Length: 112
Length: 116
Image (cartoon, rainbow over all chains, first blue to last red; front, side):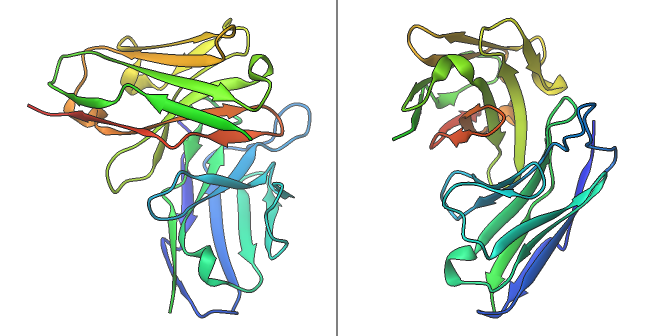
């Protein structure tokens, strides 16, 4: 199975400050058509996950533009330009290039 | 408004069976892949199974292969997972997920507890 490794696993951030989460895959996530199959999700406490970013860098509808995704091949990053209180929770990267689809361990963002 | 409503969770003993259902609305069900993703208490996410829009392709994670069976009824906009020979380690919230190349919709989840 493709292993997705996130870092850090815990991310204390001051309100208004930037945050960055790294995600590395054990195999390339590039498909034969050139697309890269990597999503980012956010799960607030007690809620279902919600996708934020699809195919590395595309924001889902309604996702604030302070969220951005980047990367290629096996190395990816989710950045929050200015953290707000509603951003707390766990962030997961997920690959769907290979079966089984696999998630990273999750990065818990909390406000300092 | 998109809705995915799971049902069928509960408490069962090891070795018993359970069938989860998910009723979808608010999107074009017949064009979307449907999946089940689970989350053990306090743990991360695990993609369990998925099914092609026309039901022609089904895939399972190794830990449930031979025990779980995913199916769908496009006329009812519903997806199911039959879970047999349940184990303690299958205890989790099970989420129904509908997706295509652009969309990604999640239900609220249903809790399955396997315990003696």
